[in-house]
Image 1 (tube, rainbow, N blue to C red):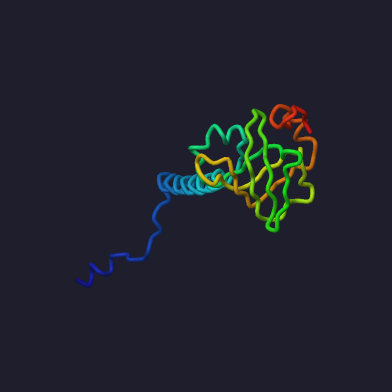
Image 2: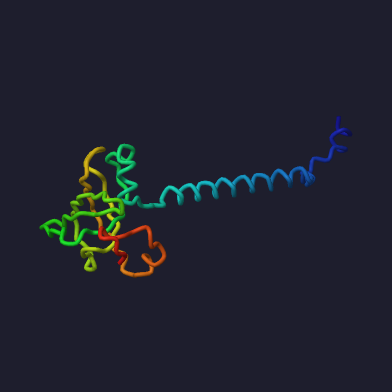
Length: 160
C-alpha cells in the first residue's frame, strides 16, 4: 500500500479554460445587461407624462374617469376667479368644449386669460365637466404656438 500512495499526485490543477465556458460567461453577461436595460427603459417609459387636450379628454371622459392626468387648453378670458386656495377658471378646447377648473395651489405669475396652459389633476366624476387641479403649467414662449398652430386656439379662433 505504501507504493500506491507515493505514485498518486494530489496537487490541485486549474480546470482548462474551454471556449464553451467563455461563451457561457459572455451569455450570462449579455443576459444581465439586457435585463438591466429592459428594467430601466420600462421605468422611464412609465414615467413619461403626456397631456390630453380638452377635446380629447371629452371624447375619452368615461375611460379617464377620476384618474390623474394632464389637461391642456386655453384659459377663457375673463373667467379667472382667484380664491384663497388657488384659482377657478374655464379651460376651452378648439371644438367648443370647455372644462371648469378648480385649482388649489398658487398659479404661476404668467397665468392669465387667453393663454395655453396645462393643468395636472382629474375630473370629479366620469361625466363631470369639473376638473380639480393641483398644478398649472404655463408655457411662456411663443415658439410652442408657432410649432403647433392648429393645436391650441383661443375660442375666438386667434392663436396666441
